[in-house]
Length: 159
Image (cartoon, rainbow, N blue to C red; front, side):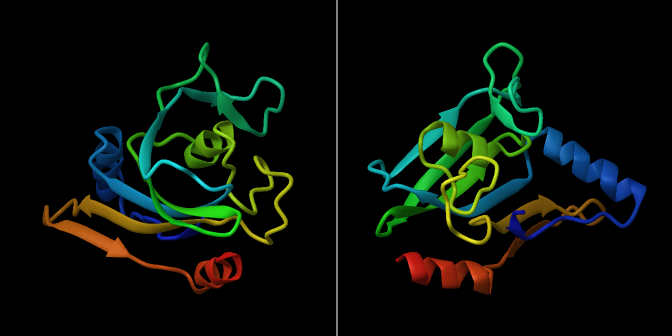
């Protein structure tokens, strides 16, 4: 449900090289998120292990017993009426990581059908806006940035 940039590999060599970069945490992924509530801190880090939710197998959850390390860095960009616009940077890459971390701290992402059932927003307000990695063949550092029109409209509506 996340909008924005995705990375597609055209061959096995590229796939293996980029998978290695993911494993080494050398790929930079940044997201914009609009979450419920107004954050007081300008920035922070959530470090809590994530694993399958033992009560709902479709969801992930903070799981200190069986979870894997998960680290999300966030920066408050703007406080809106009843929401906050954040920039999130993943240090690790667990399934639903940003969604789980923010929800666990009582700042669920607007429009999140799994972790924010109270949200009335029509879509998940999580957008992958920057992706940086090293090209597998040329070894050139590449960085791509985008912002979706839908995301901007939602920002104006909630701002």
